Amino acid sequence: MKARPEIVTVIKRLLCFTRNPLIRWSDRLEAALMIGAVLLALLAIPFAAAVGSGAYAEGKGRAAEQAANRQETTAVLLADAPPVHVRLDGVPLDEKAEAVARWTVPGGLIREGVVTVDAGTATGNEVRIWLDASGRPVEAPVTDDDALSQGIGVGTGLWLGWVTLVATVFLACRAALGRSRAAEWAREWRRVAQDRPAA
Image (cartoon, rainbow, N blue to C red; front, side):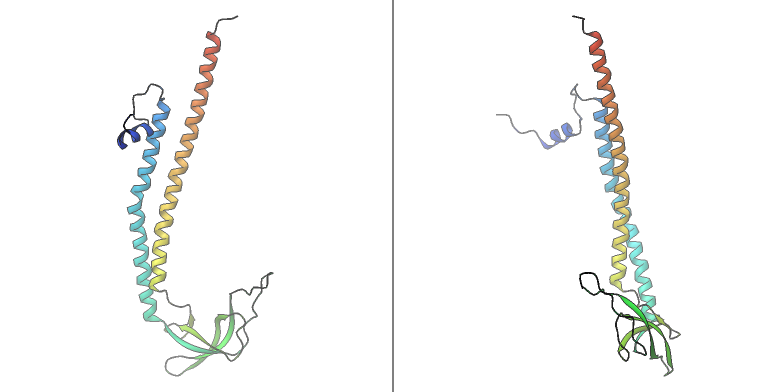
């Protein structure tokens, strides 16, 4: 009973790195392209991680800046927000709407303006809003979790985009090699047909 070949031998056979005369040059080229594609995908991981880390650091800095310049307060609605829309299956949509509200800024000054609230919120309800340094309504500050999600998303998206590009180029080259092999087979069959003696 033959012993199982070593893993290196198996890899060599899979990648066509043997002296088998039946292996064509195109098979070896395709194997080399496959190795190159895998290496390019792996080498891109540190670069994608670095870009993702940069995006995370930028988002974290923005979160710290916004947290320092924005403050949360309570506003009272002066008008009903537009009603909640319902899907065809009867499930209400979780959406935002704008409504007029009144709030107090630091220093005791009362202001009125349009704020973003949940759709369907009735007049007189209290809602939490964020104000900038001048007392105007703004979006909630970015959190560290948002910055982390942004960093992961940027890094992962960059790497997946690179892998998609590399895979597309590899598949295009593989298709071209396939057409070349098919044409080579056709030439060989024509040569065989010409060399065969007539009956």
